[in-house]
Each structure stands twice: as C-alpha cells, then as structure tokens.
Image (cartoon, rainbow over all chains, first blue to last red; front, side):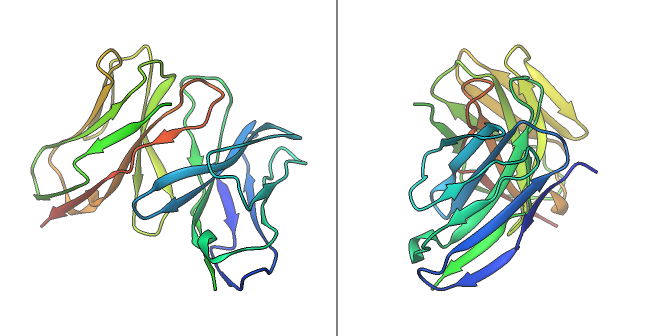
Length: 114
Length: 112
C-alpha cells in the first residue's frame, strides 16, 4: 500500500528541547516536502527536497532543518523549538515533473511547544 | 507569486443537494490542479488531479473542471451525503518541480 508515514502523531515538548519528526515513503518518490498548517493561514511549505542530498527552503523555513540522506526518508528537525512552532505538520511526497502525478500526504503530527 | 483563493470558506447544505466549490488562482501558468479532502485532525487525501491540458476529471460523484484562461476550477459534488462533510482544498504547482500552493479550503457540512 502506498504510504507516507510520519512519527510521532502527537508531541508535546518544552521550549528549547531539540526534536525530530520522521517521515518515510514507500513509493520511491523523488520529491518530498514538509508543510505546517495553522488556523487562518492554511498550509505553508517549510522545506522540500527533489532528491537525495538536495533540499531547498519553502515559504517558512526559519527554525527548521531537514536532511535527505536516503530517498525514502525526510526528517524534520527543530533544533530549539519555540511556542510559535506549535502547529500541525504534514509530510508529503510525489514523483517529479509528471503532470499526472498526485501528491501523497502523511497523517500529520500535532506539535505543542510549551 | 501564485495565490489561490477558495470561496466560500464554509458551506452547510442538506443531504442530497448538489453543490459547487470554487477555486481561483492568479497565475494561469499552472502545471496541474489538485483537489484534496481533509477530515478534522487528519491528513490530506487527493480526490482529483486535472492536468493543465485537461478540462475536467470525474471520480464517482465528484467532477472537477479547469479553466486556465480565467484562473478557475470548480469541484462539483452530486447528491451530497453526511460522509462528504470535510474541508476541501485546491492546490496548484507553478511547474513540475515547484511546491504546491494551497487555498485555505472550504469547510463543508452536509446535514442529514
């Protein structure tokens, strides 16, 4: 079954404590990305990657890091989380540059930073 | 910069009605347009994808149309059911390698 898997699904942490949200896809997709979703602001892209070792900033990259060492994995790293990073986070993947290819989303990670 | 707008922001209809959700985008140079469904607290599920060369796509009770020249897409839901209650989002990538730009969604409630 085609899947994008995120972990954890829920996370409560405190300001400044480093955390990593993992994302894995089983579809051999080149393109992976991270979004955050906030009320009234909609979905905004944080970072994306078009292949292994290739990452680029999205619209709201401040305070986040990513890495793409393997094609299937694209972890999101918050080195020093702050309360304004409390949000619902989604990982997504798709094939590159084919107009008929849909984007698949993970189930989401709800993060609260106290 | 591409902007995507969805109207209305919320819609409540009785069961059985046919309804139309609207999506507009400012730059007609799009690669494709996708409609997603999101249930509360859940991820996004792709419903339909229309390539830039197509005019419409159908899946069951759903029909999506695309008019690139006017910067509009509509999602038509026939014979609505309570299970259709969700937020519907449209999104466009400016090109094959660029991120999706999302609208803020239409929250649909179908009342039994």
